[in-house]
Length: 188
Length: 265
Image 1 (cartoon, rainbow over the protein chains, first blue to last red):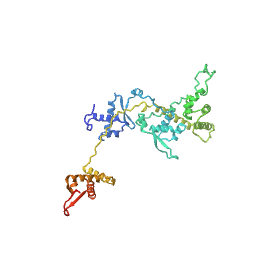
Image 2: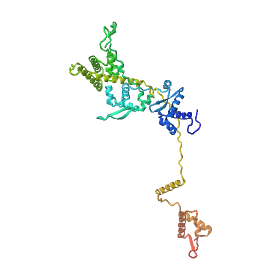
Image 3: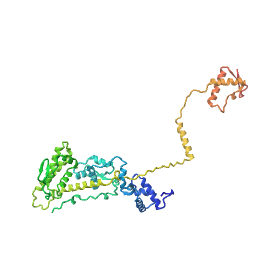
Image 4: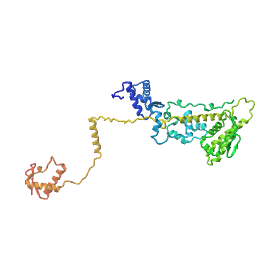
């Protein structure tokens, strides 16, 4: 299906085509505000949300899926095709060290935190390379300084972090249970 | 807390010696220790490992056992790894001190007037539980699919055609611009002194040839005012004066303001 006229989209089908073209070509997830600009702001947000839901349904049987993440909507390849596409890139995906992952977890679950907070929880000094590594990935950034002597930087996770893990908000992080409690052996 | 339900082993041999009873402590082959050292992320990690391996109740830690085992580990670390990093060693030693402090506070008799006192282990337990939560949360984070690894984002190519909108120019603007250019150019004008490309001698020859042909020529007829430029007219006049001076040509005039004629002398 294609749009024939170079006028403003009139029908729902035409509006969805405009959305689809924009989302398929976007380099980053597109926010609702960005998508509204497609229609010169002559659209209600509720209508846009409805169109996005319909578009998502339209693509259900296709290789791409429309997904909502923290900073907006994006098309991504369905998970079942990823192993095949991985064969195209020779380098293995990089994984973070345990120290980096624990640092990231502390920032994600306890944000905003200082280096001191991270050290208190892990019981060892923070490796500055890990902080830099996570900042370069644009997963964490400095959101302020704690009002104590030395004014240490407060770190928090970024929307990119959520986008990259396909999360819409921090609330969608895997729940942090009190794991220790659950494993207490019964003292009979 | 050590499970006592295991039957006594009968045929377990370690380094040639038959093991008759389960070791009370966690047994680590010496070779394996090096591997453990790299695995632990710090003193809390090591403590958690000891607690879990030994199936200790984290809420009722037998401090003496734990401290003893922890110290044994830290000592072995020093032996195995000569280059054991100082700051890392400090973290581990600080924890040793804390463990011993907790144990000694537990040994102190409670004064009768204090009815309720916090368990000295409470802070350690809180930290251990906090660390374990984070440790497991980190594993869960790592298990999440990531953009760039498992998640591939669609990005179809599209050629962004930038339409060049030609700006509108009025005639008045164009003329104003041209005047401005001229005015600016005039500031750069130089007074050029160049060699005379017009030869007086050459013109003298021209005049002589003309006079030989026509005998008597009116003064003005020698000048082509319309096509010759000013320099050429000047050179022509100079040539004429030169011819007269050299006595080759004679100039005549009947009365004042009447035509002047030239002829070969």
